[in-house]
Amino acid sequence: MGEQSGERRTGGIVRRGVERQIEDRKLLERPEAPEFLESDPWRVLRIQAEFVAGFDALATLGPAVTFFGSARVRPPDPMYDAARAMAAELARRGFAVITGGGPGTMEAANMGAREGRGLSVGLNIELPFEQGLNEYVNLGIEFHYFFVRKTMFVKYAEAFVIFPGGFGTMDELFEALTLIQTGKIVHFPVIMFGSDYWAGLHQWIRDRVLAEGKISPEDLNLMVGTDDIQHAADIVQQYYQRKVLENKPQVRAEPKKSDAQ
Image (cartoon, rainbow, N blue to C red; front, side, top):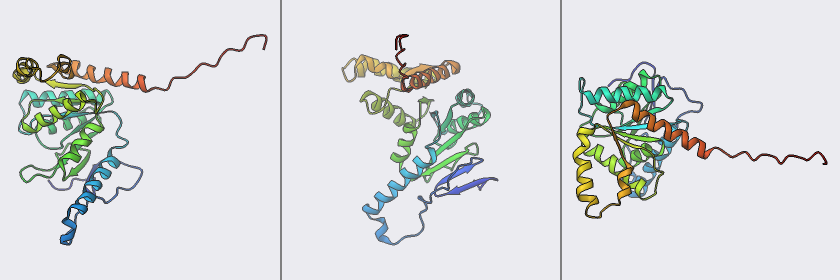
C-alpha cells in the first residue's frame, strides 16, 4: 500500500491525521549495517528501540480496547460486521481501538473506530506473507519482534475482545488468560465474541482441563462469552469506570473547628 495523503512515517511509526507535540524518535530505522551489528548484544539494542518507540507512541493514548480475530474474514461475514459495529460503539464511548493493523477482523475494527470518531491504532508485524497496515489505521507502529508487539497489546488495553480466529488469536487469548491467572496483570475483561465458535473450546476446558484439575473453578470466570455488542461494550465501560473510581485519590475532609476555638 502506497503512502497515503497526510501520512507521515518516522522510525516505524505511521501517523495519518494524528498530531503530536514532540518529534518522533528515529529508533526503528534499519539501514544496511556491518555484520557485527547482527550480533546478540546489538540485537538487544534493537529490541530496546522497539519498546521505546512503542511506549513513546502510545503513552498518551488514553483508554483503549484491543481487538483480536481472524485476518481471513471478509464482508459480508457476520463477524466482520460485528467487529466493525463493536469498535464503533466503543469509540463512541471514548475508547481507542487497537488491532494488529492487518486485514479481516483487524480491518473491520479499525474501520469501526474511524466511524465512531475514535482513534484507530494498528500494531503491525513484519511477516513475509501478510500485507501492511490497513487503510483505516490512524496511528500505526510496525514491529519486527512479536513479543514487543504483544506487550503493547496488553499494556495499553482496558479489555481484550476476541473474535473467531486461528492460531494467532488463540495465542493472544491464552496469553491474556495466563497473565491474569498468575497475577502478572490486573483482571481486565477478556470477551470472547461468537458463542457458537467458542462453544467447543469452553466445553473442552470444562470437561477436560477443569475436570482433570489442570485449572481451578474460578479460572472459568476469567473469560466472558457473548453475542451482544451492547453487552460487551457495557462490560468494558463498567470495568473502566470502576478502575477510575478505585484509583481516584481520596480527599480527606478537614476536621471542623468547634465554635470555642
